[in-house]
Image 1 (cartoon, each protein chain N blue to C red):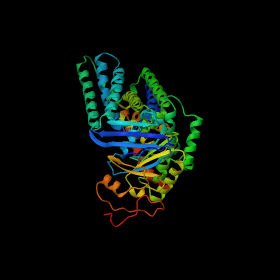
Image 2: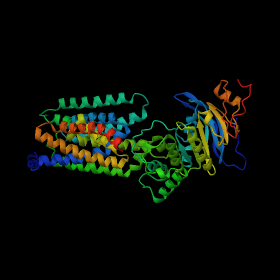
Image 3: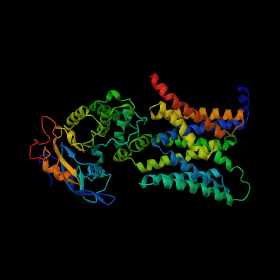
Image 4: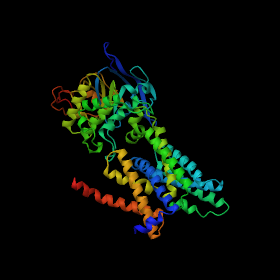
Length: 274
Length: 262
């Protein structure tokens, strides 16, 4: 079983895929931790689907769809973040609406675009096996931006996540910090589209962090462990999908899902041992 | 009615004719309050009576509809740095991965600007705050693993880490059993030697004798700088006659229960 896998490493597409998995896991580990702790999984899903509007627009304007995705993603992130903070009631309805409108806009733009549009599915379901080296560079840059911003504003992000009221009293610019976090989620979502596709972004964003959160009690450790788990899941998922000839994105998700369920089962057992 | 701080006492909080509304419902009506240096005031009131709202106004989290509020002679937003805030322990995620030390360290945020890191001096203040609250041993414990009383001490330590002149506490004994609550009141009493304290609570029976002066707050403020809550204060605040049950504490907060109280 190992032989074909080592063989596979000779292919550029496979090496790129593994690298993409690693790069995405760094972002997911860090940002996913915030998403899980602050319980903003729904907003993250909304941002991911709204980003599809950007992909459609990108196609329509004959630009790299990823650029369109970044613009829509960040716009959706800021919009949904603002809605969540300013509206007292039914924020999740508004988010659901933006989610749907973004998605539908993307589909319409694609309809209006002439020419061959076969690789749309790849944005929805992922195409980690078709990651060009240029995309890897973009992912690396996004990772650097994410890591830099989180490091720079770590103490504010922590305070805002834990106790917003107290942070406000301490004169932390809570709204601005929250929106920065939203933008980081937007950037992470765009990175993840290649690996698992928009539709399953929530899964890779939350599962590694959720698993790690069950076992560690410090945020930085949680982020690190989540990133490592992300690498394990994407690599395992890739190998399995290669061996069994299955869709890689979905395989990665199933590996993560299985690990999550195992961790839920293991937790009470571990507690008994303590 | 209001009390003036004595001549020798500096006025640290001044509230004049304060009205506050929430969704156009009046929550505070014509509040006048003067808090002097090193006062220790307990305000009792029913839920929905504006206790948290008053604190929010003092912290600059809610703008008054009418009236003037000054803290340390300055407008509230400027004066936030003099106030240590101990909020009500609301919905709290037991799984939040943060240690006691990191929670208390948040109190230093007001002293650090956006891109500045915490310094060694900050760490000293944090350690001292934890020591005062008797929580230094548990500094590395995740906050979710603490009991209610321990968590309250940590929140008090966090407020202390801001190096405040005034402590504002919202329902500090909520979810804390009476023995633990007594020890927390002792802590507050000790802190009161160099910090002014104002706390609000709905729990009449728990207001301790450590509090120097008490009043009632239910949209309107019934505070006369007195050490006891008289039956008419209670009736005015709660609008119905209430049977008083006084705990046998040495310095009674409530007056003797006589047979004329109904």
